[in-house]
Length: 247
Ligand SMILES: Nc1ncnc2c1ncn2[C@@H]1O[C@H](COP(=O)(O)OP(=O)(O)OP(=O)(O)O)[C@@H](O)[C@H]1O
Ligand SMILES: [Mg+2]
Image 1: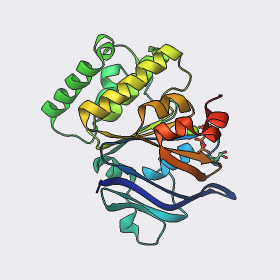
Image 2 (image 1 turned 90 degrees about the horizontal axis):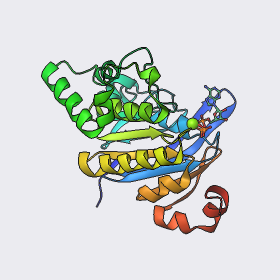
Image 3 (image 1 turned 60 degrees about the vertical axis):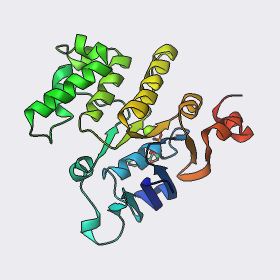
């Protein structure tokens, strides 16, 4: 049996009267790339934020490696704060990348491992990121705000990897980038999955790209999961083709 590294059960999140998530069930197995596709406002970012504790659940629960990390119940011990969730091995690359524009590339990378005290280990991880993203080594003293969009996305991913996560959450890494750069980003995501043994949960509006690199996919519409299948099947699904692949 495959090990479920992430599992959401009947997760609901409300913003006042708006039900952004209406009872989401999903799971991600260790080593997989899983994508979640859906239109603007479907609830994709809300879902990722709820996993890392940036939104509270009004119902349901989330487990990571079999342990509860978020729960709508009253037991506060089951609701880990964001820093504890990151320390337990989940890292989020937020929508819009969230690099610190006034800090250099190197300082951004250091921030990604702010929980780490061991200086030698921090240095080793930075070197490892420079090996993976050569452009970041070249630009290490440059302010992050002056990088191109694609370079900022690379930096955001590298920074998220600085905490050596077991699970990497990516919120629309292709947003606003040119087609060639998007291909580059997705190739990098595949490589991270293969070489770093990091499980990846990817949220995207670029359904074709996301499904083409993932094992399994979920389709979300206004707070509900409406489809779940192997990505190869979703790419052939007439409904998905019409609504998300522009075919
Ligand atoms: N802080 C908030 N307060 C009130 N409503 C919110 C808040 N954040 C999100 N929403 C609403 O919740 C719904 C889901 O938003 P969410 O950002 O999760 O969608 P999304 O699928 O990530 O969309 P996009 O593809 O545009 O990023 C939307 O209707 C949105 O307006
Ligand atoms: Mg979003």
